[in-house]
Image: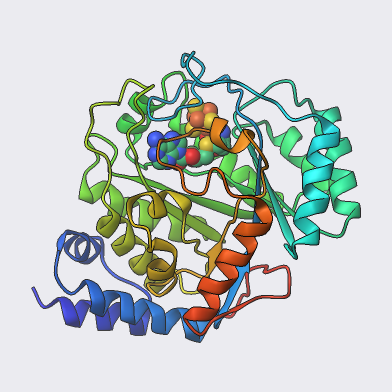
Length: 344
Ligand code: SAH
Ligand code: SF4
């Protein structure tokens, strides 16, 4: 197989056959050529700006039971917390003071946050002049509609895997069809939609990863976040091997080639596996980083997976650290809200 030819084809046409995606994902060499092509397409389509999104982990209480996740409801070893409305608004105001233009509000599926409570919070954060991304799981069309009207601009909901049988095994009690329904509803309501995959789930095939990419393309995803699965000792998957950094990075590069205008983050889970990950991934196709703005002990308690970076750092430290990394590779922090630019 002539991988270089495939990389050139993806770079020129932003389109590959399923079999071609599979062979590029399977290959272990030509990683740097793939990353360089993705870096070139990144520069051409989304430029040198890096968008920072402040990530606020506002509750680790969850009604779902995803096998891979430390916040699953059956895990009684995680110390549960839920921020008050005042704490959320305080952290949001601080995020703004560090210069973040977007607040990403992420949590488990915590039913305490009713439509009324969420709407009140969203309105107040919106009034601060921030773009808002929600990442709070599966809701009804009506609920997504109310949040949009209250000021939410974007929504993150990973498909995790497009292998339906694997999805339903990994997420007991959840249905693949409903996950897809949520993503379609969010798109039709005018949200910028972020989705993505967990790489290295037990039993996940390379073919299904290629299908993930084709799914993101068909959905016209505005943002795609890729993270390696990291086994958590408090979950049923504790003895599984976990995903690889290089495989995740290959996926990021392929995504940039095939969805050239998408916003693609260098994810925190990548940095758990490689301490220079954010810099490497920003040079392999990514253009977004989501620094943590959760303060104090909450950060440690939001334990999706072990080895989470920077759990004892302050948000101010994180802002300085990531700014330095971005400048060190000749890039700059964007000063706009970083909505997707549509060129195609
Ligand atoms: N409850 C919401 C948002 C919080 S979970 C939701 O599920 O959409 C956010 C993401 O964390 C999930 O989409 C999943 O991809 C990731 N995650 C959970 N457990 C993980 C693990 N063990 N390793 C890596 N990522 C994990
Ligand atoms: Fe809950 Fe999200 Fe974790 Fe699933 S991945 S258990 S929905 S927090």
